[in-house]
Image: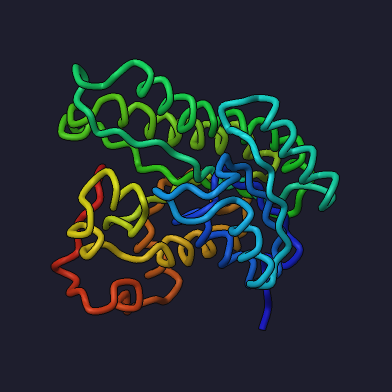
Length: 275
């Protein structure tokens, strides 16, 4: 069996848990090198895992891991993560913009600090982490940027539902599609990826809908399997797309999604936002 991501170096924002960790573990099964830039250095009773437990899990799955404690909002942290990735593994092949902050507060209820946090982590973090890695991606064979953000849907339903969060997530997507156009000649693919249903993550459980919504959500592995399929595609011919998780897997030959939501009927799954 081939392992397309063997020896590839992935720079990821976040990754201590949830979808980011699932993507890291899927790549690690190929023997990839995972560099995670995340803040969770010590255990938090509200959240499962730290950057160090995530790195251990990556190694146990067959990959190499580098845990860089830092903040994607901080330019020095980004520079440090890029420098460590290059010094340790010789370059960067893939950037995964995973870190994200969510607040579905309406405009008058959204505090300025929360607004700024969302823009700084989601939009600015995506732009600056990718920007710092692009000189190295230009030297890579089959370079990819993948942002976990939605297709840009200008339906007033989504523009007006939670304007602050919508700006932050669409900002991620706009930056990514911009990279696709700007660096196409350099052979760097840049795509976004978003699910049709909610995913079992801390954000869904703690912020959106608690246990009831978690029970109607798919596991992070569906996102990870779709991300893997994106990252093994030829970069020069697979770029500038706003991809949907389920569509990517269908194109890869997956016909049964029950493994990602055991015991839950398809009709009972909760649709994610923006679609």
